[in-house]
Length: 311
Ligand SMILES: O=C(O)CCC(=O)C(=O)O
Ligand SMILES: [Fe+2]
Image 1 (spheres, helix red, strand yellow):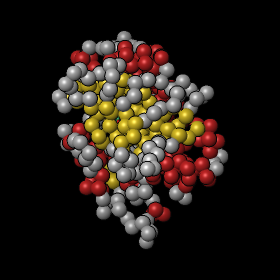
Image 2: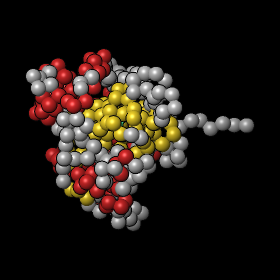
Image 3: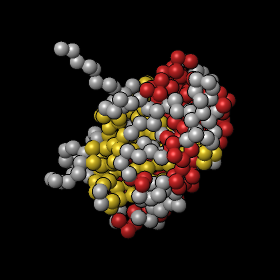
Image 4: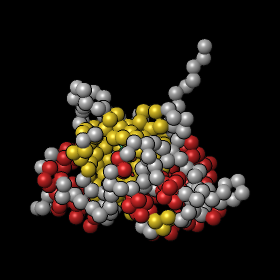
């Protein structure tokens, strides 16, 4: 009797990514292939950054220790950009959002809402974290655009990208409580880049409907395609369902950097041909968030991208 190997999320070394500012076509194809097959891959940054360091963890613990009346001041006119918590069917999760996290102004405005007398430590740490991750995001996007032969659109995309940084805290479940920290969903972003403390819990669904746990190597990040990337690529890139399942008695902290496109996302005409008929119309990325009503954002396994802008 044979056995089938468990599918594993591909791991790509950051040094290989960085070298691709000069671009090896095969490395670009490898990144694209990972996003087409799994919708995600791990970037190993060992030796370049500490990733989720003890300073990052301390900063998040201090933030979540603030009183609830302070945390709910994290508001936004965009869905899932502000405070999320106290959801009856997701009791383990608390989360906050920092808009324009690659700009000092964006991080500062969040910081002064949380700590009116300021918190330079938090502000500097989050800002440099967001800058670092945004470089990975830009490199990945450039490599995929190159692999698709549409690198000429990279700069105009850069001009309209904005980075939302979200911090998440999941408490351990008590007896008889759901273990689900986050429901199975696809991201609404173009690209999401995630990291966590040492507490596991994230699972990604493969195209053939198998849940695989994300095993982060030390100092690594998970790069994941969101619904907007799927639509932009005319359905080539896969935006995978994923969820968080909490086992054991430890608190889990994670950070996600989510890219959004300010304005209209257009499927490159080069990605539409007789073998790949057009599947998505041009769409307003933030309009996609508005398309979800507040509650359906938390609906299990329900991506609206086809009904929003499918042909
Ligand atoms: O906490 C995590 O690792 C994942 C969070 C997530 O999927 C999200 O915020 O969209
Ligand atoms: Fe997600």
